[in-house]
Image: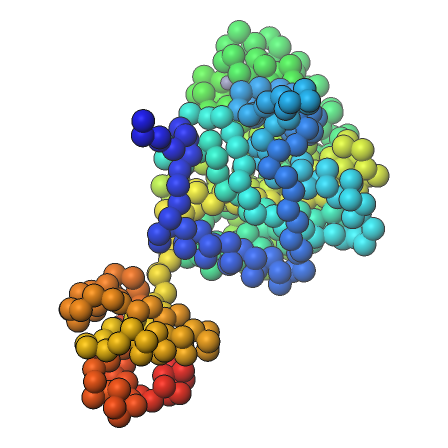
Length: 402
Ligand SMILES: [Zn+2]
Ligand SMILES: [Zn+2]
């Protein structure tokens, strides 16, 4: 029997995994500029952590979560997203002492979805969270960081932002929305009828044109903000303007998870339907999960989503060494010398020089060193730059300076 990779997952290797590492490095480099520190949480958690935080009515919890019982009968879930585990960790590990606390994570997430080109059952996400910052600058910082990451990766993006209110204005608004939709429930799709029960704001997430018609004439939450929320949204927009970050206010943008409030945002790029990055504020989640009340906000970027659009050129580096009539010992001696000086070195063992040069080029070596007996006698090596074609005769020590 020949095993296949499980449906909705994939193996990464070759240039693709190097591209992923490159994306991780860009992410780390930029979040570190803002004093974010790394956190790593387990791949699985108590399943109820997600039902409580993401919301029982959300599609993630009802349809997409990988849950299982372990041998002791505990109900566990493979994490479908990264924020709830980080919140669980900062409470459990008592990290909320020096605020604001800024953390970032990189890791696999799992959702049982119908696999598509850019939707996988196991996928990589990188995210960052800020705890203990309630001012608009923190919301803006997240947007700024994301946009810098996309820019550095060569991705053209559009940014959509919205403000979905605080407990006060949201409660008033959702009551009105429910009253409005109650009369039209029959016109809504099954999902929206469930959203109506569990978290009515989420109907705006529905892509069904008939549903959209039902609430298209209904005023959005953004038009019904309380004075505090309205002012805060204005402040965020003015800060974004000052930083010259372009955005579009999308009043239907509500985000699919229950825990969001206040400012929310999503990044898009052409050719990819789903958001490539998204985030927002979740001021009550820490308290909801048993910590002391702590305002918080965060964002995450889907690595597989951006993979096809990231500009990445594999770096040529290292030395391929080949010899004509040269002993293994001599070839190894040069290779070891280079490695001891932290240069990548590889001895090509077949005889034909043309094979050696082809291998070096396929494997992205920057230099080829072809050794003949003359070279050995003179103690100089002919080093060919495979990128420029330039060839030089160099002593061992001079090779290190390349
Ligand atoms: Zn409000
Ligand atoms: Zn619907």
